[in-house]
Length: 440
Image (cartoon, rainbow, N blue to C red; front, side):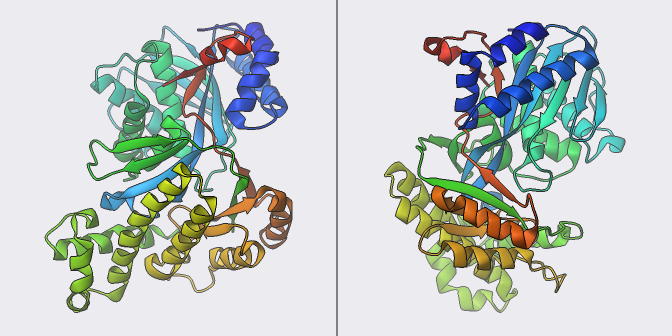
């Protein structure tokens, strides 16, 4: 459904709009009401008061399964309440015009020519073009649109702003031109394709799937072309998820990231396999002394991490199903120890000075031992750590961590129950809340 500026604003400020936004963002709606109303006004100021709709796609956080997806392993992840919101309107032109407030830049992509362009590599324009191209290749309808996007996801935070952007573009095309009939998993695969083939990053499907599906998801990548995705019921559990930005730079770390899947694949190749998921764990353990003679010990350690982490995901999934939060916390701490000791992705070998993540983990252990959990977040080496903090301890944790890493370095997250969405109906009644959100 498309509405003019005043009707969109009236709905967002209504009681029904407040209920919708408080459910979507797991808290008070007041800030989000202002945010969306301002986005509608800025969209109208830039593109005119045309009929439009409002969209959102969330960032994501990995809960368990550090560097397991590229070995066809299991991952536990969650969509979070930091997102990219957009106001978009279809046009008769064959051009997508998207203004990004984060980059203060307009991106224009003509959709009559959708081949990859070298000058767009590593830019949002490449993602817009790649998502649109893949939709078209798969037989879906595509069209031009005007959009204004406002992101809350800090770039470089490990919360997958690029995946959220891909899901956002796919969700807009889905609802403006395909009546919302494209599945959330298909939107995720389309986003992954755009990032691989157009943006130039060889990522897996984890980020896009979590952003598109929403909530807490358990993904098994044993069959990469058809991953098994399970959405878990996640009640309020008395913890805040905190992401601490330690200030490290990812620049120059490409080889460190690439070494992890390369070394894991080398161990798999020893057994005649392409990925560690195909390798029998007991056989690996029995032949460890022989493997050491053909490759560095670090490769052996990283393979050990994969086997334990892949099993740990199942334990954490069961602890969520059975509401055993003590077991969940213990497994999260184990995951952090495994990443530090076996996977060895807490700090880079290329820099003897970069130890921000290690410091954050050490201080988190001191503050949270016996109460919460802590682990490296995402790819590692630099950037962020994740902490599970009891809600009544979050203020103190944030104050102490920000005294070390600077004001604003701690980002509090809640789990968002849904993924990429169009905020659809203008009904203000609670009984019709099922129509407020139109999912992918």
